[in-house]
Image (cartoon, rainbow, N blue to C red; front, side, top):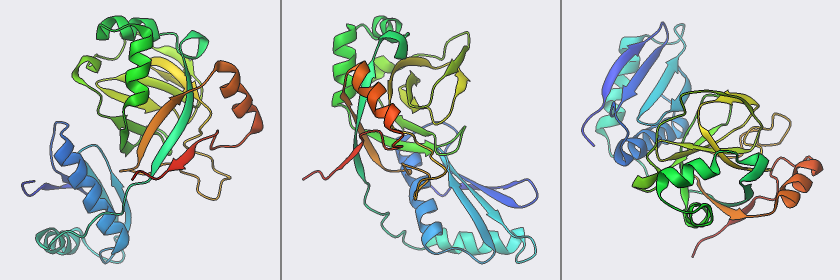
Length: 239
């Protein structure tokens, strides 16, 4: 990747921007930088948050200045980047269509596939966590094939439940909290991306890999009823 832009943001932050349009290379570069800054913080650094193609870097104004932080950051960017941590892989049971996925038929029609074929394709695709955002721990997953390129709806669904699996723009958003949305709902899982009382409140982190595996509505309802925030999700170890 070319050197990113380093931009001032608010009173106490820098934005390190690799691209203004989504690209896999920019996303991976942002994740690698954020991972490196988490592992070896810069003087005065207090928060790092990677996005789809940029990194937010917040600093303590009592401990450093924006100019000093920028100088330290430029030196870090000029050095060879350390390898990011190995991604974790997860299998997530999910049900599709019906009450949990009222827009599945519409998405399948837009993609030129049957509902069955669309669900099979989604479940066969290993998705990468591109970013967490909009709500605590909420993952944006991608990228899906080109026929999944479709805009958000021109209306809002007033509420989707936690675990709702929605799509737009070749991505999947797995909702972490009840919310209105313009993304089309395909189904639901029992995984809770954000569980404040869990030992690890965020179930997923940028760079993780995730694949859905089909389950019945009844199975997902039963898993939700247990209260286990992992909802039957298992960690897999690819060969």
